[in-house]
Image 1 (tube, protein in one colour):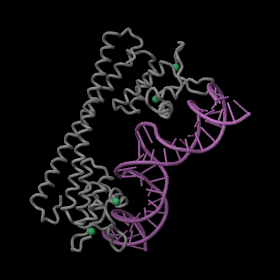
Image 2: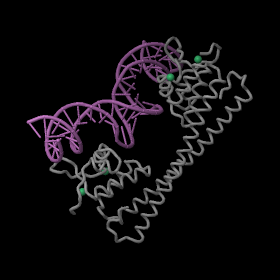
Image 3: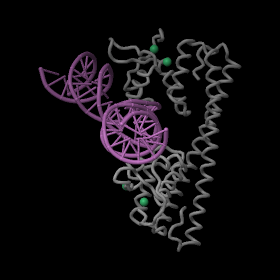
Image 4: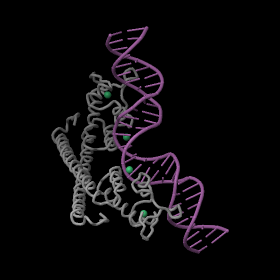
Length: 139
Length: 139
DNA sequence: AATCTTCTTGACCTTTACGTAAGCATAATT
DNA sequence: AATTATGCTTACGTAAAGGTCAAGAAGATT
Ligand SMILES: [Zn+2]
Ligand SMILES: [Zn+2]
Ligand SMILES: [Zn+2]
Ligand SMILES: [Zn+2]
């Protein structure tokens, strides 16, 4: 998408440099995360700097636990407001905020789950210690 | 499996009383979690107390976030050492312990994930505040 | 020229825990 | 007797994120 004369990279090299597979890159294109990729002679995919930045951005969000479907929404905004970061950024912050909330909720869930397991464990241990003759403890 | 003359319950009633669907119960039987269910006249499934206890036990573990595959392992031990709770219980405790460990790990992961998101958010906010003229912030 | 490497698209496979019919049998109620 | 409720088995569908061939095309190297 850039008109600059920057270095071209092919899919294999790009995948290796980002420690992902070529399938992943093609898949992101397939579901519309990466726009239509330019080709060399109409065949091999080629990427220059801005495309790579976009892919890195996607991977970054993915590492933050944001689903590809959510990233796609962002990606759409990205396309509509090309390079207009003043428009994109607030939306991104909004999404990150709601994601933080969800992460907090998950942590709370796990916390109470842990309590449940430990309590259950204690109950079972007590059965073992005190009622080892009970043939049907009905945990 | 019991020879006692206890109340028989059919699948619909059982499902409703446990707030699950009949499909779930049949599925658990299908994958070997519930043993072969006795039938009434060779057709309709019937459950008595011990079968219900077993199902409750499965649901309990599931609520603790243990996968059906893991529960199946327990279920096998359950079958091999029928009613021998002195053998089953230590194994159950072992599984619960390893599960607590995994929950702790997940919580740690989410915690560091949260930190990442917040940091990222701060960085973006700074771009918005200080570099609003930057057309390519490369988040 | 022959081989090797990387690329292409297409399409089916994987996992988890069921949901959702389709088509039929039995049981209960009207 | 007719309708309604409940049950049965079989089997395909679902979501997420790619994995894994297959079979061919092009460029690079020996
Ligand atoms: Zn480009
Ligand atoms: Zn889109
Ligand atoms: Zn029984
Ligand atoms: Zn088994």
